[in-house]
Image 1 (cartoon, rainbow, N blue to C red):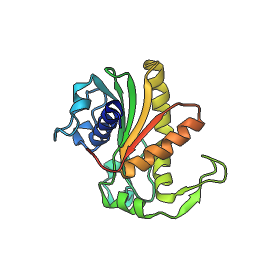
Image 2: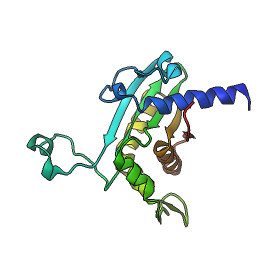
Image 3: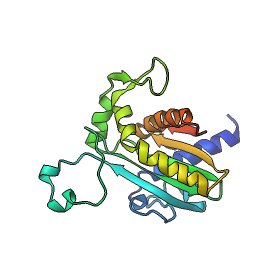
Image 4: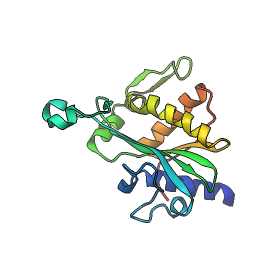
Length: 194
């Protein structure tokens, strides 16, 4: 394997690791950082978080009235909390979507919902892992709109989708859907972080 390929795999494994860092939640407009020093290549680049998401199931009957009255609607799926971000890397001219992997019981439930479902909207006569496809669909519309806006702001930047484990599955499905919609994403998904 060439040094350049290894360097790229290392870089994107660190982007996937950054999606686990809690200080990259609710920090739109800030540079990305990792409290555990898991992503020095990401931290050393000139980055800005453009959009962050954490879609999860809420039983509104059991939550306080303030959650019911939230200004923005909460999109839920029957399981799984889909989390991650879209960021610009000005140093490397990248727009990176990073999906967090399995971190909660609900994402593990999505992992084991491995029955196949119709995915003919992605490719002819295709089926996809039910849990992964439903999880992707909870963020697809908002994320696609944010990617479109980011490509206007950062023309010429390469779009990359990445993630680890559960996040890798979402990056792969999302990359396919985005290609069908006319985007040209690179997908770098990992099962193990370096």
